[in-house]
Image (cartoon, rainbow, N blue to C red; front, top):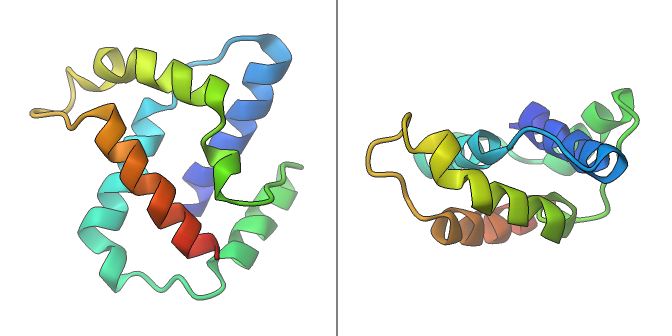
Length: 111
């Protein structure tokens, strides 16, 4: 999960620098599924420090949960949600549901 969150931050930088990047819809869906299926079993104590260490290796930073949900990224992920995930996920949940729950969960983990 930390590696996926780190890659989202790198994606943000790439999108801002190049103006394009592949969709990260699968990353958001993957984290949502991980937390939904195994969140109660995951040891998340000191996760923020662990994630910061992972990010430092790739020279990316975050100051809070909202850094993972920046508007340009969310607009692109929402636009590509069905295109990227529809063929892979039967009964794909709505983008709004997944991202809404993730915002809250990631904020709690990083608090």
